[in-house]
Figure 1 (cartoon, rainbow, N blue to C red):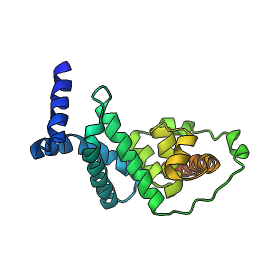
Figure 2 (cartoon, rainbow, N blue to C red; figure 1 turned 60 degrees about the horizontal axis):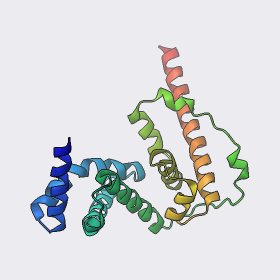
Figure 3 (spheres, helix red, strand yellow; figure 1 turned 180 degrees about the vertical axis):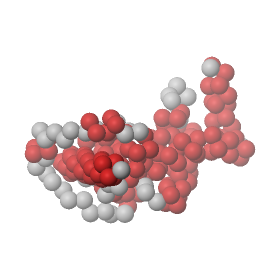
Figure 4 (cartoon, one colour; figure 1 turned 90 degrees about the horizontal axis):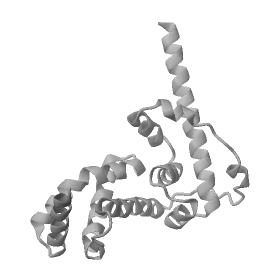
Length: 190
């Protein structure tokens, strides 16, 4: 295990020196994982590929600032997530700001239906969310950011983050219930 860390750190050192083969090895090793991160935020595969390239530009540009004591994969993932959120911010998507989030904080939407889904089914339903809701949902539940962090990254208020999350959960619940109802009707017809 220690040996694999040493190999990875040597690869990083070679990339910092500008060794192109090492950069390609690093890209080949981590691009599938980081591409899947991009796809959580962006529905369009081509756009996700573009964001992956943008993320790697930032990764290689900032590689010298990486602290070898930290988790390299997590560091790259954070850069990629920030790249995706920055893309969202640039698109200037209008998000309805709801400053009075008190009505959302105490509202509970039962998402126990999510427990019955496998990962690909859950990702399918997440992809159906509107862009703003999907960004907040992924940042909050998948990446583990707080509403304050999401607000700062997306240049929105905390109230907007909370309302987008509330709306995303409601939208997910409705889509899943609708899908289950259709499946149940189909099964009953058989």
